[in-house]
Length: 519
Image (cartoon, rainbow, N blue to C red; front, side, top):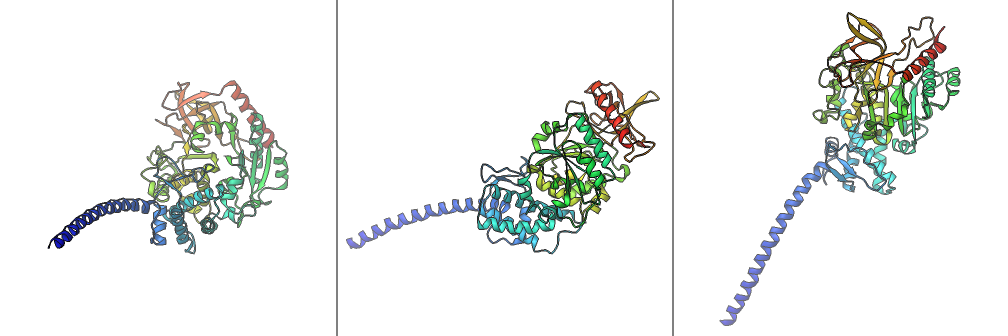
């Protein structure tokens, strides 16, 4: 009896210990389950999870914006804008999800048609994430089967979506093109028709002391004849580049659509893309030193503030933003857009665009796509040429950019009418300190003529804060009304005169135009 009781006591103590141990283990398991569950929710949002379908991976990728923690010290976080989403470490699981998303896109026969801006934005954002990862895998020399799989799927999509570099004779991919780009420079596009305009602009750049190399991008001998090529190559610091020697093009175009493609074809890493009729009062390289450019690596300029709906423009651009950048339409980078506020028909003047390829390459590629078929017809029906596609692409990918503070103005002659003053002429832009920087539109007729209809810049007018803007659009050139010699903090449009040194540059512009164009 005693032995039985003793055995029972031992069993009870062990059982009690086992129960306590069981309860303790249950609590630990519950905590672990909760922790793992919470992690799984976060993980599924950012990286996907085991067992998710390829289509689910694609949806998760394009619908989220994250910042990637660099793989190595040489990495550059290319997509981070400081506000879009959490930062994650690049793991094999995340890379595999991106690969799955790429596979889903590549399983389709073609990219979205020209009317599906929502799906184009989704695919462009997926490509962007894959590009950012592959870029880091390459520069960190991360060789593995995972990198090979990523490369295979990324290149398949690039051939469909952005085929110009990968199908060209010089580079194997957009990443290789980026890594081999060097230095800073100016890029222009021209054909034979406007070669004299380019010659005028480059000669003026040399006159004011420009130190940057210049690449003139054209497309085939039919675009830029031998006579014009000889004249341009005789100019200081100029190199000609046939974009067919760099890009894979099915045929050459001769319009606005060549401008972003010229950036891809250029050898520079940091680019000032200039229209041939853009003229500077200051060294263009000062643009690289502005706070606006240094912060983001993408610098754009505003167009005139014309009433929403002027020339039928405005509503179409808001539609493009709301579809191409659909996930971010309530949280745009450019949250002071006049078009989105429905106070202007146009947003940007693309006469000068400044880009750092290292920070903006996916946006540059998307800009090229928007200026190419099958998307160009829709874009150009809703906006005026290429000029809005630059910030459209950055908004769609949430890649940072800066729009210069000054609103568009006018530069030319001043007129007084019924006690009011107006300046009529080209589209004017001031620097960060309110001094004349550059203007768009040239000096007069752009082909040799007896009557050049020249505009000699002597006065400028600026919209200032864009309050109470009064543009006269009844004829060309456009005129902006303003207050003569108003103080710098004046919020309505104001008018000023070029300084003596600026007038010397202006006179040279006019004299050279006569020399080149007067019959």
